[in-house]
Figure 1 (cartoon, rainbow, N blue to C red):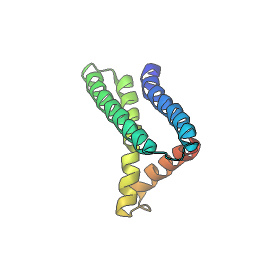
Figure 2: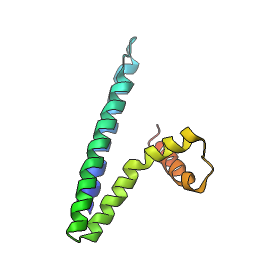
Figure 3: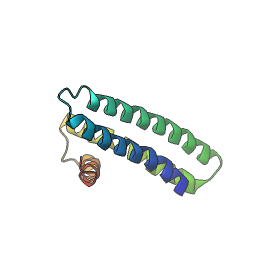
Figure 4: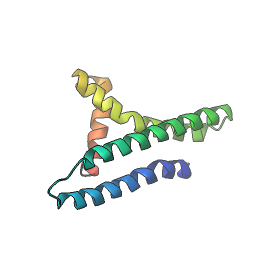
Length: 116
């Protein structure tokens, strides 16, 4: 269980540290370029690869009847899908519905905690 959570958190932590380093370096330049776009694409690739990997692992854990590991995988997949729920709720303007309130508040809290 801890290994699965570390496999989820460590790439994101490395990307966060890389983002802060690159943003500090780009802030001193007159032509910042596409630093933000590159970081967003890197985050998208990392998130899609983790989503694919954890989805495959979830299926394997369900077949092997390791329900505790499958529950951890489902939790990580829910965390990876949370930004999609946030964007979808804001896109369609249904922020006040019961279904949308949870992803919006949770994702906003994560963004606030990361100071982004």
